[in-house]
Length: 424
Image (cartoon, rainbow, N blue to C red; front, side, top):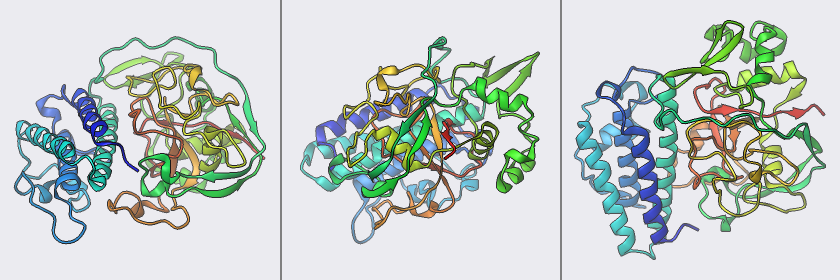
């Protein structure tokens, strides 16, 4: 089930407005930027967003050759499944003015088609897909701006001060649970399909994500040099990275500071630790005598129910409002903020603020079937780790309890932190 056509026209426009806000201040030299393994050249990425929307909403055919692009040669430039990452800086890309015109023209054509064909369920499905895809790339532009020390796209906004946070663990007795999306939940990606019963053992999960202050205890205890906290793969990664502290942290006298985009700020002690990868999260857990939750435990806590009871969000079934979660915002917030979004057992910020690593490897659900966008999930099964919940830069329309994000365990450039579980 997809959104109705009039809603999609508005949502596509909203997704584009967010994309413009995050990319409009890029200077000419930043439009390509340095070659870096975890980022795309912005000028290429903007063209890719337009190409993806055009391909699926205007050109795609279930059988046979797709229709022609309005931009000659677009497939050779922007098809991410066929254009190697390392070559994207060297392509004969259109100018930024031509690229933005391509974005505008495609959006207009898609919106007009939706208005002309409101009952076309296939078109509505692909318009939903294109809007989600654009939302994800908008968040990726945030990642790139942080990685490359570009300016904060939202300006120097005032952070929230310290806010009391719920302490301790929420305890769950476990039991049967329907994991994954239901057919009547609305749009779902293939890796969310379909809900299936699992049994969950009793567990206890932290009500809040690990804070910078808590993580600093690990760093100050020489956690990055103590072998006992790292598994074999993590120890190899650590040696190769040369890190002795989280990326973007810097010692300033006796205190820690943090690079946030192009500025250095005092480390916000009550905010969640961010830009730590799966290996770092796992090492902290060993230091603390804890563990990462499985993605099943995470979704159970977020959905707040056993015996088949499910919620679309921790607070209920209503879509996220600004009071519920730190989404579509400029920066992290203290882990005590957004109490209106609590799950019934007191877990806070399961949605928003930072993506949360889980212990689980990205795998298909039983009976997995590829959706038309075949490259979205299947190539990454077995090699990526699962994250849940969304970050401050995630779109409100994208996130839900069943949404599965996935990255390789070495990726620390994303807006990710974690919460912990008690050892059984």
